[in-house]
Each structure stands twice: as C-alpha cells, then as structure tokens.
Image (cartoon, rainbow over all chains, first blue to last red; front, side, top):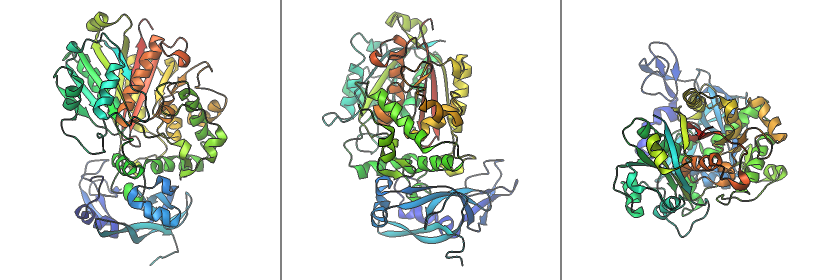
Length: 137
Length: 386
C-alpha cells in the first residue's frame, strides 16, 4: 500500500484487478474480496477463488473535476466527471469501482476490464462495472 | 486517578502564508497565555497527518519542541489521519492517568495551504483505502458521497438535512474569531453550490486550513497547583474499523464512533442525555448526521427534522453541537482538529466562550474521526463541580 501506487504495487494486484481473484475461507466458507491475511470472521486460511463479476450497486456518487484526485483529474475534465459505486458482488463481498455509465442503487452490474489511468508511464488496467447485458462476454 | 486539562490554546484556523508548521505550533502554545509551567511537562504527543508539504518528516515532534524552546522531554508524532489530534490527546490523558507522568502536552498541527489544490487532493487521499477506493477515483468527498447516496436511497435523510448541518455550523463559525469561514450561509446556497461528489456539493465539505492547537493535561494534584478551574477528562474511548467503506457490514453507520462513545460514556458515568455541548467531527455534512445517531444524541430519522426546527444550535436550548463552527466552518487543519475540539470545550466549560457560550455547560463531549471512520476517539469533559 501507499498513497502512490507504484508499478510493482500495481503488478502485485493484477490477480484482483484483471481476474477478480478473491479468497474463500477454508474453515467457514465466507468469501473475501480483495483477499486479506485471514478470514475476518473466524481467522481461518483463505484459498484463492475467482469471482463471477456479477453484482448489484449499493451506492453511487458522481465525481466532478472538483472531487477527483489528481491522477483522475484528466478523465474528470475530459468527460465532465465519472460515476463511482460500491457494488455488492454475487459471492457476498462489496468493492468500490468506477461505473462505465450511471447506475442507481439496486441496479445489476457486471465487471468489465477497462483502462483505469496512467501513472509512472504505465497504463493501469482494472475492472469497472457496466450494466448487466452491456459488454457481457 | 482523575485527569484534567489545565490550559488550552489554538491559532486562528485558515490561511497563514507567513507561518510554517513550527511557527504554527509555537503560536498555539503562546495562545495558552503566560504562566504555563513548561518545566512541569514530562512528555509531548503531537498529532499531524504529515507535515508541511504533505511529506513525512522524521523526528517531527522533537523538531517542534526544539523550535518552541520547550524542555527536551520525550516527544512523539501521533498519526491517525484526521483523528491524529484526538489520538494525541488520548495518549497524553492515558500517560497521566497511568501515573507514569504528572503532566503532558497534547498538540496538533497541520500546514495545508502551502499546497496547490492538486497536491492537497493527492495528499489527503492517503488516509483512505488507496488500493481500491482511491484507484476508483475517489477522494474523501466521494467516500462520504457514497454514504449520503445510500441514506437518500433508503429514504432515511433528505438532501436538505445535509444542508441544514452546514447552515447551523456556519452560523456558529461566524461568531468564532478563530474560524476559517466566518460567514453565514443559507440553505439555498448550500443546495446550489457547485457539485463535488453527488449528492455533496462544495458547501457540504470542510475547507483545508492551516492551524495548530494545544492543551496541557495534568494529574489532579498538579492540576490544583496550576489552576483554580480545571476541566476534568472523565471518560475516553477509541476504536478502529475497516479502512475501506465497502468492507463494512453497513456503509451508513460508523461503528468505531459507536464503540468509542460507549467506552467513554461508561467510564464517565454519563449518557448522551447528560451532555450539554459537543464538538462533532463534521468533515462532510453527512458525517454529523450519522454521528448524532452513533453518539446517541438523536436517531438519524429525526436528525434532519430537529435541525430544521433549530435544534443543536446556539440559543435553541438543549444540546449544542459544534458551537465552534465545527470542521465545516472553523476549518480542518487535519492533525490540529482533535485537539482544537478540546480547546473549544475547555473554554465552554470555563464559561469563557463569549458569544458562543452554551449557558450552564457542565458536561461536554468531543468526537474526532480518521478517514471515513477507520479510527475514532471520544472524550468526555466535566466542569469542576459539574
């Protein structure tokens, strides 16, 4: 972790950003995303599990250029702003990511890989969420 | 062992182009007035998110003592994001309560206005979940925007309830000579302000400010040697929560606040109804609404209606929340905020708050929060004989 996401830090998170690899507790079966050191419920060990990418919007906010961090300021200026949501994944955990278009709480969405931003000359790709039925494989 | 605050001071919050972090710290000490027994201070805890340019400075606390010509006692930099000041106070109170020292300095300082808006936004984001929240393009306005969006979706608040928090706190801030934003605003102005992170607009957000605050904490015996009017610290509590909002069971509650408050109330032997005046961490308007509920002051469903009727304001009778103007109007120099809450309540309990005085204030509560609630402190103060 760090304020500045270095290229090596970004590389270490690729299983999560491109494949939605979470962790499933071998003891109690609860799924975590992103994975952590142990299951927060029972401290059991986590085993890698690939999530479906399907989920539902819990809350969404439209970020204007005034509310964007500098590494996203270009995107905000070009588009006038962007939507960010907390999405409840079908397997249980919630995660924060951008939406490809506006979606209200309750809307079904699906993870898609998109360009996030560029830093240190490395374009960072990762998942965003699109309305289900749009861009589904 | 009973613990007291015996002296308190803060700089004006806002723009200080001629003062650096060291000068701000020394100015807060000077605001305590003459007669402070610096030779009695045995340890110092100084809260700051970072220092000066948003870059870490090693040996930060000793550097400040050095500049201010204080005794070379052990000095520690305390960092828990926007709760750095609250945790610095907590460390000082616990050091005295433990009997390890008789007298401690708790201070907080932040220099934010040297930074460009861009650098400032980059720096402030480090207190959240940098890997997912930040890489989704969120700053804290966005994180609190998500909380507010969910509350609106669930029909538990109205947009105007958020605005009512800002209107009240600006009315208080206009009376505070130390406040950053000394002007009243209308509900219509809040609702019409430029959007930042929906549903929050520019007037739902606290400003970035320069400033410093400090208090001296002493054991009972020493307190009576130093002042005739000690303000007792009768309860305290602190807690942590997940860094990211999305990791919590509920995104519309602040569990760390609830747990910190429960500990502080139990220790002080008082409940929410016994509190006369409170300084509540209102970095964004929605934070005060949620905190009113989590601190036990008012159910969330009623908070907006009660604010509309003028509750929690000076002159309304009953509990007054954020008589200083809160972070919203007084300003939010990150590390100074938690200590400045104690500075305001020290004056309130001594009856020295002038136009902002809460009549008969005897019991006070301070709530300071880091990030979107990943860290929280609650302190309960009592007037001598109160």
